[in-house]
Image 1 (cartoon, chains in turn orange, yellow):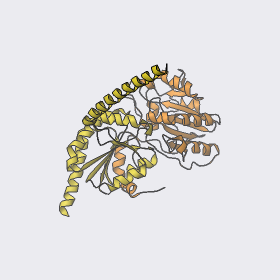
Image 2 (spheres, chains in turn blue, cyan):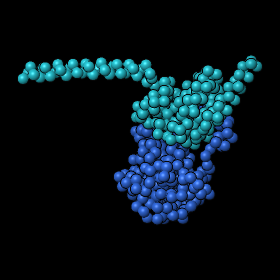
Image 3 (spheres, rainbow over the protein chains, first blue to last red):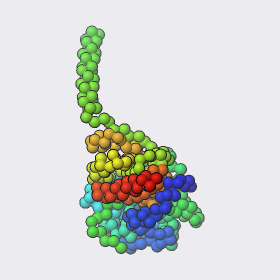
Image 4 (spheres, rainbow over the protein chains, first blue to last red):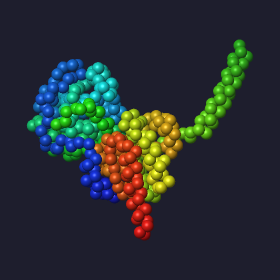
Length: 207
Length: 184
């Protein structure tokens, strides 16, 4: 990876960076947190992340309806999720946004989106944003992939081309899923991109 | 019949001419009040070059989006910062993370706020873009980065800030540059 002088300078300001970061995300190798916490799926059924675990592992993507980055990635995300849900990876899309702040992210709109886009997996509402806090998730979309032992093996974004699917050179999540299912180590376990900030509910419980 | 059609065409031509004249007059009027802001689509490496080549004592790169609520809320404060510190050497580079398809919305947003200097629009807000500004940035919007000449990152934060925070950072960094120049 190319490291410009600018990046080196930026690295020198690590302390400043840490103080400015929003929250501490889960470390690689960490166990899935809040797995038993009940959430409501888009059709009103109560379920937890423990319920969705597959024989190969589990993919949890914090997402929502309204975010323009989510919209740009939506079709790619659903395609990947549907493909690997069929290959034994449990999948859940989780919406932790406060629908009072963003009406487009309420349960009704979630159901409509899941139907229109053909989700074959649950789209869950994290009703107190507690699951997002436990994961240290801050953005949408933000993916967390766990292996069959429930340990985090991938955390980050979807791919390296937000707006243009034709220009993807690194399909990060897809690669990680393929490696997981093949029993290989994840070659790029942590990635990032610009995303929408999760609109947490006011006074949401923090772990 | 042919005559009738021809007359109609002539009639239509006249109306078209009048409409064009009216449009020209109204756009001329708009042009006097507010020049359409220019929005250029930029790749991360070009943005990096632009920051490194900036000769301003302090370059503030601000990443935002038209649909981002906190960005919209702090925008007036940001413009006030530029108004107050441009004469002392602060250059503001606006970088929108809107989709390149949304260029018109960005132009409209800027025009409504009287920003004639325009904004860059990043073609792909991926990891390469994040690392161009600061490797520790999570990618949350809005985000502000203060650079010294040559592209040395001096200070940065993510999330909305008030005028006082921008003022404090601008004052401090401009003072540092002044002190350096005096000791030269």
